Length: 201
Image 1 (cartoon, rainbow, N blue to C red):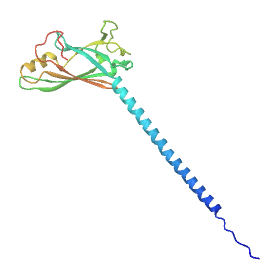
Image 2 (spheres, helix red, strand yellow):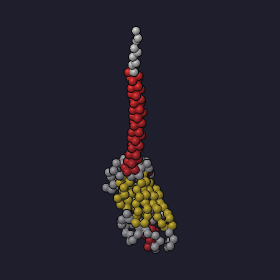
Image 3 (cartoon, rainbow, N blue to C red):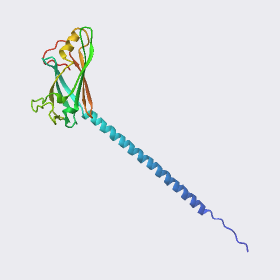
Image 4 (spheres, one colour):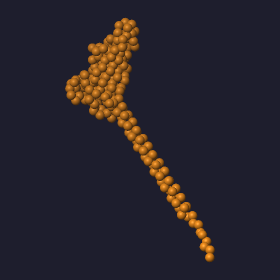
């Protein structure tokens, strides 16, 4: 009696399906890992950019006015901190003023520099005057302040005289930098007829 041999390929089909299934799981796992890593990198970059932007915008001085003083070598400034700023030490607020000075037909580049703790800072209401150089002098957001800078080189009277002689346009460039924060740039105008209290901003 002959025995009929029956071939059964169902087992091999099951093994093939299992291999495909495992391969799909591995591909999905790798893809998921790549997507998660990319998302984390993007989030970290966005956080870093956000922090830098906040420092640039919030840690900044806003200039509301600049005025000529009768002495001629002083400039009065009215300023405040940008919204969102914390309390800033006056020693962390630096000022630079660039100008052209010189005799008739001979303008020369010059600058003045210092920080806001070099002079007394007073609230615009007249309260809370600081003592220059005292430890812990600071300003905070939400309050307007007054400071009067004595200029050693870029004296407004000299700039005005140079403008009258045709040496230059009578302008001064002022930069106010905050350590770890943003910078403010303003052009001061010492041309024309200057009288005490005239705006030079």
